[in-house]
Every structure is written in C-alpha cells, then in structure tokens.
Length: 384
Image 1 (spheres, rainbow, N blue to C red):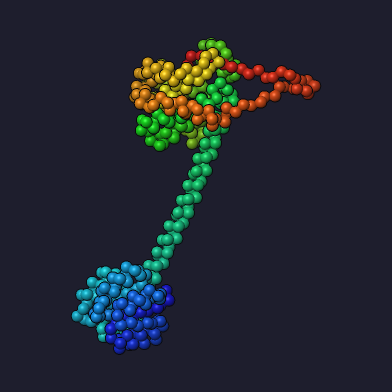
Image 2: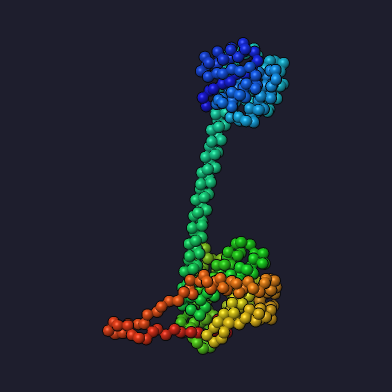
C-alpha cells in the first residue's frame, strides 16, 4: 500500500487542515468536497484510505462508505464525526468502516487511526493474496495428483491387458472371452445398481477370472478329449492358483475374490469351496450368468456357437440352481440385442484376435523345414 489518502468534507477548511497534517506525517493526500467527487477520484486513482465527513449535503458519509465497501473493498474508510453523531459513526463501522475520528481533530489521534486502518487493510490484502496463492497451489497439486492417478490407472489397465493377453496366448480357443464376459458383467451390474467401486472390482475380477489357467499344464488345458478325474482335479485348482496370483498384487486384491469364486454355483454345487447363495460374492454371481452366455454363444472345436436365444433359455432354466434368480431377472430385463453388439465391438478391438504368423522350426542344418508347429485344440470337460 502506498499511503494515498482521500479527504472528503464539504468544509474547505477541514480539508486543508487534514491535508496539511497528514502530508507532514508522510501521506499523499487529495481532497474533494462531496461523495460524488470522491467516487469520481476512485475510478481513476488508487486510493488506500478515505477520511470522510459523516454529514454532508447530497451523499452522506454512510452512503459513501457503503458504496466504497461494495466497489473498493481494499480501501480503508474512516468516518469523521462530531460528538453528537457517535451512534451513526458506530453504525458506519458495523457496515464496514474501519474507524471513526472525532471533531475537533487531534493530530496524533488522526495519524494513529489512519496508520492503524492502513495496517489492517494491508494485512487483509496479504491474507487474501496468501489464500489465493494457497488455492492456486492446491489446484495445481490436485491437478498433478489427478494426472498421477490417471497414469497409475492406465498402468493398471495395461497390466490387466498384459495378463489377459498372456492367457489368450496360452489358451487360444478362448481368445476374447475375458473381454466379452467383462463387458457382459458390467451391463448386468449397472442394471442392478452396483456402485462405481463394485463395478471397478468386478471389471478386474471378470477380466482375470481364468488367470490361474496359466499354471495348468498344456497336456490338460489343451487336451482334445474329456479330462480324467485326476486331470479334472488339477483343472479345478485354477481358481485357487489365480487367487494366489492376483492376491500378491495390491490393486487386484479385492478382485481376487471373484477369481476365487467364479465357478461357484448358487445351489452350492460349484467349486472350489461349494459356496451357496449370498455366501458367493455378488460379482461372482453376476459373472456366472455372463460366463454362461459367452460360453454358449462362442465357437468351440467340438460345436458351433449357439444363438443368444438358446443361451437365454438355458440361463432361465438354471435360475435358482446355477444362477441367482435376482441376477437372472436383471439379465432378462436388458434387451437381447446388446449382447450381440458387445460381441461385435470386442471382436473389432481385441488385440489378441490378430493373427500371428508362426514360422516352422529350423532343421538340423539351420534351414527352416517345410513343416509347421502343430496347433493343439481342446474340448472343455465338465465344470472347467
């Protein structure tokens, strides 16, 4: 603040007296005879403090104070008044004036009041500037944090993509299955009113539900015939294996519950824990319907894909046994065409669907032979 003062009084003598005193005290002073003139000065000049007479023809000191506080809130305002007008001076302070000075004036009191008012306003401006800087800093830090979280989220998604691609490469017959089932799950979950966090965990769990199959030997996973009881017991271990795998990754820990329970059935006949009803996590109950929908409507080495109508009828018949009735009811509340649309979208965007050219193995002399690697196929055994 530059100590620029404006003295407003309809008496010329008062203006001259205050200007002389305050100029000698180190202030830069201007004088006007009315409130209207004061407002005109404020429009063109930076004024730090105003000393205004309370009673003036036309615009009173109270009216001028209100106008100044509204338009120039950083300008200090002191009311000059006689003994009989102290009540009005106090009213002016309630309305925002910084202080009042009594007539007849005393030099030391006037200078002290002006200096005090300027200091208060200086501190107010400093506090406001600090608050503004603090808000800007918070906004900046918030933006940086949001960018960091978005980057982390992107890394999470890329991690899931890599894990899913690894499974697709190992079990090519189910390429795109995890993406489709995940999309089906999210449609059902949204219709059931699941929270954003529930849907987020469901998305991760559904996408990685079969990640445990990475540890299943190819001789079992890719076997083109029905699995033996011993082989089936190995296959049934993949939910546990997947659960142990994702449980080691902190951001996938909650999704691990779906990985562990994605083969449980509503009537308790599933595996690996034989859970029943509400003991099965809601995400796994939703997954069961979505998984059956995709399994029945996808091509397999031993059969062609069935139409969505056939899959819907199977889901209807298994309500209360394999599937929770509430999830089935929600599934049937959704239009049938959306499932086909999702399948088409996933087919267009699935990176694992890109054909890979596999070169034949080299012969003993280092020259590639005419043969190619055999491509194994498998046929699902029951509940695998």
